[in-house]
Length: 186
Image (cartoon, rainbow, N blue to C red; front, side, top):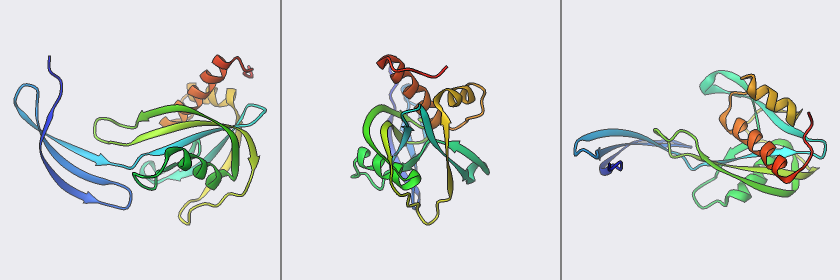
């Protein structure tokens, strides 16, 4: 069975500082037509910053769409389609935590919400950390905290961490370390 849709028309709806929204008219596999609302986003990065004692540096910040304070791994958006993902990773880690890493492992990327949004988030594991100086954006307010990797895994399994990039990042980092044969606190 054919599953693809063909775009037969596009209408721009909104262009903001971070996102664009458009409405596409598509031809369905059965020949019918439907409307798809699409959010265009430049994408972003997220970083699991792991120290030598298997502690992860997390940020706690208010997220207006959910009107609550969320515990998450450091992250940020790409400044544009031309920005290198790895450069963005290093920038965001230092901006939000003041940390600089000597070793990075790419943990992959995921589609944030493929039903309506084109955003991809790339995740890195950062190790061999040293302290630099944080320099938050003018509209960014957060607190940096450390948690053991094991504690974060328990918090994820208990539903205490709800942020998707954090769940994916922590679990992928833990699995990578397991596959590398590194110790994991019990």
